[in-house]
Image (cartoon, rainbow, N blue to C red; front, top):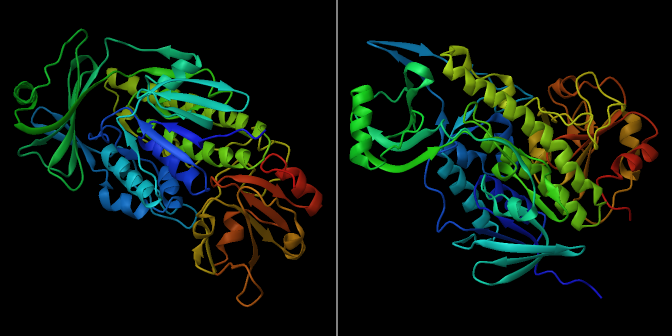
Length: 503
């Protein structure tokens, strides 16, 4: 008897992580529901830094231009020391290159990130179910039965919790959330207008003992995100009159028109396992960080980007072990991010300006799954790339394409063939009919040499480190799945066993 499922995946939590996952699953043709216990979409600025790698995810989903229109560039920091304001650049501005088209962090309040993704979901035909809480769930070998607070029971193949640090999904699944919460260390965050404060600086007023006041201008508005690090055991008053009086006493400036407040505790925790059978956690449900380095939202979105294509492939018949690779690939990334953000945050206590500086690690462009279950460390490599590395952009021309990122956009796998023997083998390689399709491209050095992509600038082989005939398989999440240099048919079949079902 065939098992009946109402849907393929139930996603709990409609923030950036759950919304990214839902969008990725929908474009794979899966049946999805997205529920959130909140009565409406989030309305505050909270996580406001969208890193370069996350911008590439948004571009793949087709919403980067919309996000950029809603956001802006990070301003110079202005550190107020009595009557003196010291300018300080928190991160170096990089020029776009052929390989990295979006090199700098985007200043985008979280409510606007949510709005961009929610509009995408609407275009994809999904209605987000706000005010719908998950009560509990049970799972068996064939699926998950979730009971919503309304009493409705939903049967799905998989359940994903993107429901934040207090995740109901994580707790119900019995997943241990290892780490610590310093109850004495809290941050008051406020969205408000501030009179007579320049909008070309992220203002910081240092205070003794690692305390500080900060005000970052939010783009396309008269608002700032205000941050006040609280004293231990302090109970802050969050009504507008009290906030205005306090801010005036600290800075001499007038605050008004408060639209959102929150008290943030810098939890430092990571889940012991990202999977419990048919149940998964992502984003803050799996790892929580200090606010330093603008890493939490970005790491969560990339959790979703890693998990989405794997769920799609397994539902289409790929080996279940592919889903185990979600934890194996993403947990070490979260652990590194947690360590780095903790290090940066600790520097605030010691008034180290270096703790405010952000570098390449925060941009997340060098993240690699090399050496993991899908990218063995004994396979072929090029001069610049290994399996598991991010697949860089590069100029090229082809039908509807002026760069490789145009080719990669979408839910498919991509196979690039460099050299005559690889090009000759390209149409003869077997790919299953179920799951994500495989798009094959021969790389030519001059126009008119044949179908495929033309390397118009000579940069593509250099960026990809090509020195001989090579096949490069790109995963749907933009990482290199395999690099093959010989025995095309057998090597390709072996390399793709983990990614797709065998027809």
